[in-house]
Length: 160
Image (cartoon, rainbow, N blue to C red):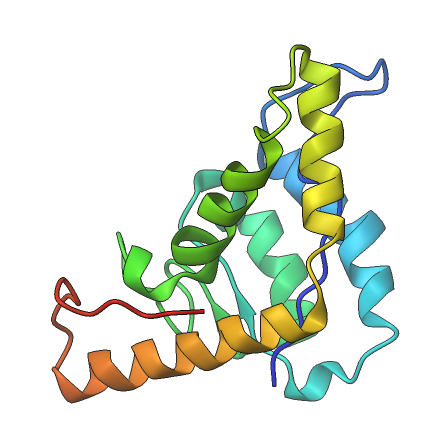
């Protein structure tokens, strides 16, 4: 069973303007939003997975995550090194972005605010049952990769 929580997928500064995520902003998100939310869960059984984006692998960021997850951290340069360019294995790549995109443009948003509202709504509406199917699919993908000794999955089409 997996657990996923979503926070604002849009980073904004104090004036409400969109900003690029850097190590400091990502660290602040971990400290101010992610860590407090974890207090509601048994983190001894949780693993944390992230890609190798520079903001994710900044030393201060990694130290924050290691304080909570120890060796249960899947990230670039860490105890479990997530394979680079592994869209076959990353639920955010093979599921979330396409799913969100398919719905946020349905009503043809004409402003950035409308688009942002749609993004927040679509992500907030993702039900636990759907995430359970994503995790089941992810497990199947991992099994396939293990059995094929790391090969890509071009001929495999997984259904949600």
